[in-house]
Length: 180
Ligand SMILES: CC(C)(COP(=O)(O)OP(=O)(O)OC[C@H]1O[C@@H](n2cnc3c(N)ncnc32)[C@H](O)[C@@H]1OP(=O)(O)O)[C@@H](O)C(=O)NCCC(=O)NCCS
Image (cartoon, rainbow, N blue to C red; front, side):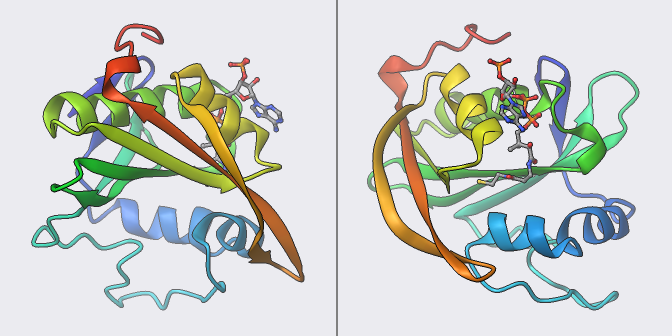
Protein backbone atom coordinates (compact mmCIF):
# COMPACT_ATOMS: atom_id res chain seq x y z
CA UNK A 1 0.00 0.00 0.00
CA UNK A 2 1.25 3.47 -0.94
CA UNK A 3 0.45 6.00 1.75
CA UNK A 4 0.12 9.74 1.30
CA UNK A 5 -1.52 12.02 3.88
CA UNK A 6 -5.13 10.97 4.36
CA UNK A 7 -5.15 8.32 1.60
CA UNK A 8 -3.74 4.95 0.71
CA UNK A 9 -3.32 3.54 -2.81
CA UNK A 10 -3.69 -0.22 -3.03
CA UNK A 11 -4.48 -2.93 -5.59
CA UNK A 12 -7.99 -3.20 -7.05
CA UNK A 13 -10.13 -5.67 -5.07
CA UNK A 14 -13.12 -7.57 -6.44
CA UNK A 15 -15.41 -5.79 -3.93
CA UNK A 16 -14.34 -2.37 -5.25
CA UNK A 17 -15.69 -3.01 -8.72
CA UNK A 18 -19.47 -2.62 -8.22
CA UNK A 19 -18.93 0.52 -6.12
CA UNK A 20 -16.65 2.19 -8.67
CA UNK A 21 -18.95 1.16 -11.52
CA UNK A 22 -22.07 2.57 -9.85
CA UNK A 23 -20.64 5.72 -8.33
CA UNK A 24 -18.04 6.74 -10.92
CA UNK A 25 -18.56 5.12 -14.30
CA UNK A 26 -22.38 5.03 -14.38
CA UNK A 27 -22.36 8.81 -13.84
CA UNK A 28 -22.58 10.08 -17.42
CA UNK A 29 -21.48 13.64 -16.69
CA UNK A 30 -18.50 12.63 -14.56
CA UNK A 31 -17.39 9.93 -16.99
CA UNK A 32 -17.80 12.12 -20.07
CA UNK A 33 -15.73 14.88 -18.45
CA UNK A 34 -12.99 12.60 -17.10
CA UNK A 35 -12.47 9.96 -19.75
CA UNK A 36 -11.76 11.81 -22.99
CA UNK A 37 -14.22 9.73 -24.98
CA UNK A 38 -17.92 9.00 -25.32
CA UNK A 39 -19.62 7.58 -22.26
CA UNK A 40 -20.58 3.93 -22.53
CA UNK A 41 -22.27 1.85 -19.84
CA UNK A 42 -20.30 -0.99 -18.29
CA UNK A 43 -22.21 -4.25 -18.23
CA UNK A 44 -21.86 -5.97 -14.83
CA UNK A 45 -19.71 -9.08 -15.13
CA UNK A 46 -17.72 -7.88 -18.15
CA UNK A 47 -13.98 -7.30 -17.86
CA UNK A 48 -14.02 -3.63 -18.74
CA UNK A 49 -10.46 -2.23 -18.57
CA UNK A 50 -11.69 0.85 -16.70
CA UNK A 51 -12.44 -1.40 -13.72
CA UNK A 52 -10.54 -4.65 -14.14
CA UNK A 53 -6.79 -4.62 -13.92
CA UNK A 54 -4.46 -6.43 -16.25
CA UNK A 55 -1.12 -6.85 -14.49
CA UNK A 56 0.55 -7.81 -17.77
CA UNK A 57 0.08 -4.24 -19.09
CA UNK A 58 3.43 -2.75 -18.14
CA UNK A 59 2.57 0.83 -19.02
CA UNK A 60 -0.60 1.11 -16.97
CA UNK A 61 -0.79 0.85 -13.17
CA UNK A 62 -4.25 1.18 -11.64
CA UNK A 63 -4.91 1.67 -7.93
CA UNK A 64 -7.94 1.79 -5.72
CA UNK A 65 -7.88 4.75 -3.35
CA UNK A 66 -8.85 4.21 0.30
CA UNK A 67 -8.96 6.35 3.41
CA UNK A 68 -5.83 5.83 5.51
CA UNK A 69 -7.93 5.48 8.61
CA UNK A 70 -10.40 2.64 8.25
CA UNK A 71 -9.60 1.68 4.66
CA UNK A 72 -12.92 2.80 3.13
CA UNK A 73 -12.85 2.85 -0.68
CA UNK A 74 -12.99 6.44 -1.97
CA UNK A 75 -11.91 6.23 -5.61
CA UNK A 76 -9.61 5.18 -8.38
CA UNK A 77 -6.17 6.43 -9.47
CA UNK A 78 -3.88 5.44 -12.34
CA UNK A 79 -0.37 6.01 -13.57
CA UNK A 80 -0.82 5.46 -17.30
CA UNK A 81 1.13 5.84 -20.52
CA UNK A 82 4.36 4.92 -18.74
CA UNK A 83 7.16 5.52 -21.24
CA UNK A 84 10.40 3.92 -20.05
CA UNK A 85 12.49 5.50 -22.82
CA UNK A 86 11.52 9.12 -22.10
CA UNK A 87 10.82 8.23 -18.44
CA UNK A 88 7.44 9.92 -18.38
CA UNK A 89 3.87 9.02 -17.50
CA UNK A 90 0.39 10.48 -17.06
CA UNK A 91 -1.72 10.71 -13.92
CA UNK A 92 -5.46 10.09 -13.72
CA UNK A 93 -7.85 9.96 -10.77
CA UNK A 94 -11.50 9.99 -9.85
CA UNK A 95 -13.03 10.14 -6.39
CA UNK A 96 -16.49 8.99 -5.34
CA UNK A 97 -18.82 12.00 -5.06
CA UNK A 98 -18.97 11.76 -1.25
CA UNK A 99 -15.16 11.92 -1.03
CA UNK A 100 -14.64 15.10 -3.06
CA UNK A 101 -13.64 18.46 -1.63
CA UNK A 102 -11.96 17.02 1.49
CA UNK A 103 -8.33 17.26 0.42
CA UNK A 104 -8.12 13.64 -0.72
CA UNK A 105 -7.45 14.54 -4.38
CA UNK A 106 -4.37 16.56 -3.42
CA UNK A 107 -3.09 13.62 -1.37
CA UNK A 108 -3.74 11.14 -4.21
CA UNK A 109 -1.67 13.28 -6.61
CA UNK A 110 1.07 13.36 -3.98
CA UNK A 111 1.05 9.55 -3.63
CA UNK A 112 1.10 9.10 -7.44
CA UNK A 113 4.10 11.44 -7.66
CA UNK A 114 5.90 9.31 -5.08
CA UNK A 115 5.07 6.19 -7.08
CA UNK A 116 6.11 7.75 -10.41
CA UNK A 117 9.30 9.44 -9.27
CA UNK A 118 10.59 7.35 -6.36
CA UNK A 119 9.29 3.87 -7.16
CA UNK A 120 9.38 3.99 -10.97
CA UNK A 121 12.31 6.39 -11.42
CA UNK A 122 10.44 8.61 -13.86
CA UNK A 123 11.61 12.06 -14.89
CA UNK A 124 8.34 13.75 -15.88
CA UNK A 125 4.68 13.41 -14.89
CA UNK A 126 1.84 14.96 -16.84
CA UNK A 127 -1.84 15.69 -16.24
CA UNK A 128 -4.46 16.77 -18.74
CA UNK A 129 -7.71 18.13 -17.37
CA UNK A 130 -10.61 20.30 -18.49
CA UNK A 131 -9.90 23.99 -18.00
CA UNK A 132 -12.93 24.33 -15.72
CA UNK A 133 -11.91 21.47 -13.42
CA UNK A 134 -10.68 23.77 -10.67
CA UNK A 135 -10.38 21.02 -8.06
CA UNK A 136 -8.11 18.95 -10.33
CA UNK A 137 -6.04 21.97 -11.35
CA UNK A 138 -5.57 22.98 -7.73
CA UNK A 139 -4.78 19.39 -6.59
CA UNK A 140 -2.02 19.29 -9.23
CA UNK A 141 -0.65 22.76 -8.50
CA UNK A 142 -0.54 22.09 -4.76
CA UNK A 143 1.90 19.30 -5.64
CA UNK A 144 4.13 21.50 -7.78
CA UNK A 145 2.66 20.86 -11.25
CA UNK A 146 2.84 23.88 -13.53
CA UNK A 147 0.51 24.81 -16.37
CA UNK A 148 2.40 24.25 -19.60
CA UNK A 149 -0.31 25.08 -22.08
CA UNK A 150 -3.95 25.18 -23.06
CA UNK A 151 -5.26 22.78 -25.69
CA UNK A 152 -7.99 24.92 -27.18
CA UNK A 153 -11.33 23.22 -27.89
CA UNK A 154 -9.64 19.84 -27.62
CA UNK A 155 -12.36 17.93 -25.77
CA UNK A 156 -15.87 17.19 -27.00
CA UNK A 157 -17.94 17.00 -23.82
CA UNK A 158 -21.69 16.51 -23.89
CA UNK A 159 -22.48 18.85 -26.75
CA UNK A 160 -19.63 21.36 -26.70
CA UNK A 161 -15.90 21.68 -27.25
CA UNK A 162 -13.98 22.56 -24.09
CA UNK A 163 -10.37 23.59 -23.51
CA UNK A 164 -7.97 21.31 -21.68
CA UNK A 165 -5.01 22.38 -19.57
CA UNK A 166 -1.75 20.46 -19.73
CA UNK A 167 0.26 20.39 -16.50
CA UNK A 168 3.71 18.91 -15.94
CA UNK A 169 6.07 18.22 -13.05
CA UNK A 170 9.74 17.31 -13.41
CA UNK A 171 11.49 15.21 -10.81
CA UNK A 172 13.99 17.97 -10.04
CA UNK A 173 11.11 20.28 -9.08
CA UNK A 174 9.32 17.64 -7.02
CA UNK A 175 9.21 18.32 -3.29
CA UNK A 176 8.15 15.00 -1.79
CA UNK A 177 7.27 16.44 1.59
CA UNK A 178 5.62 19.62 0.38
CA UNK A 179 2.14 18.18 0.89
CA UNK A 180 2.66 15.58 3.60
C1 LIG B 1 -10.75 16.37 -9.30
C2 LIG B 1 -10.70 15.62 -7.95
C3 LIG B 1 -9.82 14.38 -8.07
C4 LIG B 1 -10.09 16.59 -6.92
O1 LIG B 1 -10.05 15.96 -5.66
P1 LIG B 1 -10.73 16.65 -4.38
O2 LIG B 1 -10.46 15.76 -3.22
O3 LIG B 1 -12.14 16.97 -4.69
O4 LIG B 1 -9.88 17.98 -4.27
P2 LIG B 1 -9.29 18.59 -2.91
O5 LIG B 1 -10.32 18.50 -1.83
O6 LIG B 1 -7.95 17.96 -2.65
O7 LIG B 1 -9.13 20.10 -3.31
C5 LIG B 1 -8.03 20.57 -4.02
C6 LIG B 1 -8.14 22.07 -4.12
O8 LIG B 1 -9.20 22.41 -5.00
C7 LIG B 1 -10.13 23.24 -4.34
N1 LIG B 1 -11.46 22.80 -4.78
C8 LIG B 1 -12.08 21.65 -4.45
N2 LIG B 1 -13.27 21.58 -5.07
C9 LIG B 1 -13.38 22.73 -5.79
C10 LIG B 1 -14.38 23.27 -6.66
N3 LIG B 1 -15.50 22.59 -6.90
N4 LIG B 1 -14.15 24.49 -7.22
C11 LIG B 1 -13.02 25.17 -6.98
N5 LIG B 1 -12.01 24.70 -6.17
C12 LIG B 1 -12.22 23.51 -5.60
C13 LIG B 1 -9.93 23.01 -2.86
O9 LIG B 1 -10.33 24.13 -2.09
C14 LIG B 1 -8.45 22.79 -2.81
O10 LIG B 1 -7.76 24.02 -2.90
P3 LIG B 1 -6.81 24.49 -1.69
O11 LIG B 1 -5.76 23.43 -1.61
O12 LIG B 1 -6.31 25.80 -2.14
O13 LIG B 1 -7.67 24.53 -0.48
C15 LIG B 1 -12.13 15.20 -7.49
O14 LIG B 1 -12.91 16.35 -7.26
C16 LIG B 1 -12.84 14.29 -8.47
O15 LIG B 1 -12.65 13.08 -8.42
N6 LIG B 1 -13.65 14.86 -9.39
C17 LIG B 1 -14.38 14.08 -10.39
C18 LIG B 1 -13.47 13.32 -11.37
C19 LIG B 1 -12.45 14.21 -12.01
O16 LIG B 1 -12.70 15.36 -12.36
N7 LIG B 1 -11.25 13.66 -12.16
C20 LIG B 1 -10.14 14.32 -12.81
C21 LIG B 1 -10.16 14.10 -14.28
S1 LIG B 1 -8.72 14.79 -15.06
